Length: 327
Image (cartoon, rainbow, N blue to C red; front, side):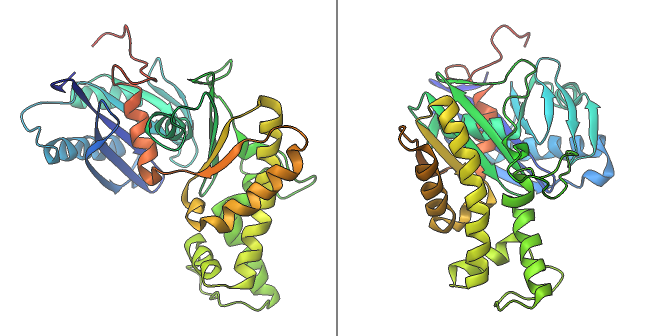
């Protein structure tokens, strides 16, 4: 492991369906250099690995580490992984199934690679150096195109019997609701994700509801968040509806696990108090008379996944996972 004095350095990668982000992270969880490239997953997994390799080399050089190589790399993946074999079991947004990402990337860079689910990686990042620091019972939910979640129990990442951990995006919150990509109906993703916000806005536009939102085909969640911040009643109503369902799911988790804190991250968290306050109201209402968790926004933003992935491969971090692996 490359070190500067007491500081270990590693690369954390957040592999997304749209972009790949990479960062050089030190032993205190601080980013020394970062960059990103488009994923372009339509080119196939080998092409994506080539882009990841180039990106790692670039950020390593940005950090002034030319002539050395990263000894260990952590990768957050949008799907199910087997961390111990380095295999992506299923990543629907990438179109990958049983792809040996760890071996493929490790061979190109000459470095061991640890894979983690991307939402779990975000949870690790926020727990290590973000809004969850010092918490022992913590839930991080990432609300973007889909919805992911990571759970810290007694200070450790909960991964369950199969390594899948928590899948809050597929909690059923609407009886006989809309179809979800998982094959079920009424999942949280269908009513609270960024994709759901866009769908609800388009439905309202089709009905002719009064709004400042445009009917153009490029409408996305950022437009809805911007309109809500500017006082658009329709956009604010959509956010409140999504937040209501999100609050139901979070309250159920809080009652089941006696959580200390819940962190909301992902792109929709950019709505700030417009998403946070109605979620808090719902959690408070549904957890009475029991103690309720503090509900806050994440503080690491898009860096949470990269920092959390790096935490898995940095000795001394609370979530180091490569102990005993051959290097």
